[in-house]
Image (cartoon, rainbow, N blue to C red; front, top):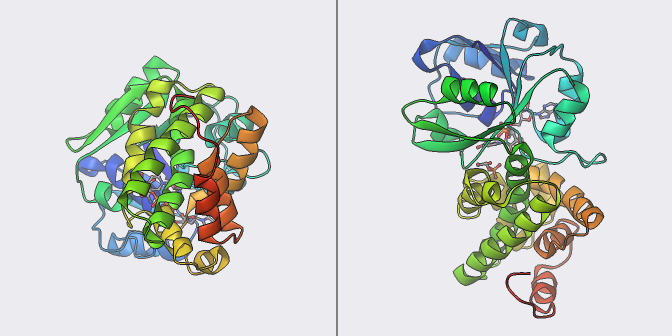
Length: 325
Ligand SMILES: NC(=O)C1=CN([C@@H]2O[C@H](COP(=O)(O)OP(=O)(O)OC[C@H]3O[C@@H](n4cnc5c(N)ncnc54)[C@H](O)[C@@H]3O)[C@@H](O)[C@H]2O)C=CC1
Ligand SMILES: O=C(CO)COP(=O)(O)O
């Protein structure tokens, strides 16, 4: 199966490296001409994945039509830009494997829902899990959820992408796999705030556990399965991104916890912190589904400029409740 990758950021590049194992040719579409130049001539993506030697079998392009020859497309464009790129692409009935993690502002759609809306003939799959791009690109051991409703396609994609250090676990729960990845980005910001404000390790563990509870409530309300949320794409990714400054979402939270404004922190970056865009949409989607998400609401307040101590106080002052509800 000839693979094309849409999106030349860190994760698209790392996935191109996965797909190019054994020097199998892979096409990588990148928006930035300097990324195309750097991948093709130096076999490195200096802008987004500096320091990792890439397979020469990866050929980059910024012409979308160059991906026409590919039989399956890994879609790794950030959630807020996905619609713009997918609209320009003739997909036909080729499978789209969604690898971005977020919810679209305005429509409140998950990325696979955007793909289904724009390309109803294309079967969709979701690849998600605890996967820092640098580690994957260097070949460090990693495991992911590969979700697809079609058993045959799921097995074919899982076989095609798996390798000695990259394990794919199949699931038929596309929605559950997507929700874990989108929600954990918001919760990682909260855990970064705990670090930045010096609130301690107990607070971080509490946020991970209660954040997982709200991720599960929301995921189940949207049709996902609890066991998917407890797997690699949910709890697995939550634990990874809530515990390391390698996470862009966590490090954004560290800055917020130190009292810096969100606009200033986001203006400094070329890389995405999907949780910043997802948080307000998730708050709306949760309200529409009648699901309580207090940690998400707290992250929204912090992004909107509320002082850290006031937000923490109000989170802790909520009425006491049973753990299971
Ligand atoms: N970096 C990682 O370790 C992982 C990232 N992801 C997800 O993958 C998705 C892509 O993230 P990264 O590759 O890390 O991005 P990145 O932060 O490395 O690079 C930014 C990306 O955004 C694109 N971009 C910026 N403005 C754009 C526009 N106006 N239109 C279209 N594209 C635009 C850039 O071309 C570039 O590909 C995100 O949803 C992220 O949550 C998922 C797993 C791991
Ligand atoms: O999704 C990721 C790891 O699985 C990457 O997280 P960040 O976008 O927060 O860096």
